[in-house]
Length: 325
Image (cartoon, rainbow, N blue to C red; front, top):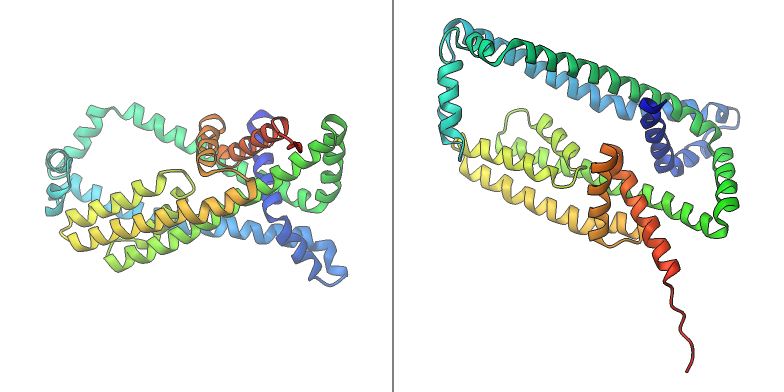
């Protein structure tokens, strides 16, 4: 089961984070309809996951078809380099030289592929395909497991709390509650804030005239979940606008992205995560980075939980009682 434990952990995190919404949803249903509450709410969560993913795949497919058409034209007749490529800071001349030798020359792309080696490229493509199939299976198994967690979550929670009390005593219950609060705070601080950042930057991309602003906004919101991921993306967008000769829009994207990042990462997100986990900002960042390095993407949520538990134990074991003189 090792390869599929991630699906169960993702299902557990999703169930814990959305449980208050599920209980409210269940309480608003008529009496007989409550037996279908786990299925209905799982369907809503599935739609929430699959709708953005489907849109992203649709946009990627559209961009891929355009890219394939451009490569076909470059192979047959050559594709002149856009004038703005040379103006890309630091790497403009290198990219222009590669473009002129590969894409601007008829037949240059096939020669470049032959030099690079089609075997490694086919191997990478095959590995990417296998990874996509595996990730899709993990997502489907996570959504399937989520239904049973909504259906039997209360019973499972009581059994887990009973087990924790037997092992760790009453303090174990306190640490379990702290872990749940940390997970919910981390989800709110990462997902909701990342969604807001994607919308704010997506609108800015559209106003700046960047191609495919919705896709850029979606990628910004996705990378905003990863520490230091969002600046790389809006910095790249700013470089593209600068190279295209739109220096004012490039500067505006850079300034606006920095302001959004500072407000979200240093004010909103620490309030949402820190208040729930009772952690200072530096420990939140260390927990996320260490979690990502150890557990991958799951570590974004697992890292702060481990850090909050350690800090809670530290405060408990080093508690100093004041005595009257």
